[in-house]
Image (cartoon, rainbow, N blue to C red):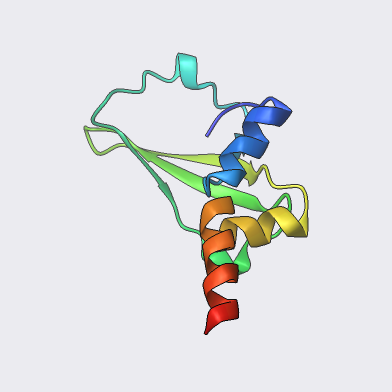
Length: 102
């Protein structure tokens, strides 16, 4: 989760099967006072993922306070969505290769 991603970094995350999430509201991580015991929760069914999908992320502080953050999936194409659903490039290749032998 970040305010923005460099194109190559975003692409590399997707290739590794990691969903890049871009903050779209006024939340600024550097000013939020995030601590190691804080937790971020993303409730997203992989089958509902679409390019540029709006996502709500919940930040729960160690003291129990919650903050809702408006974000979007930094995924631009259907091909990237499919790659994420497979778990990244290596998993997609393995599934495709093993699927042909079965």
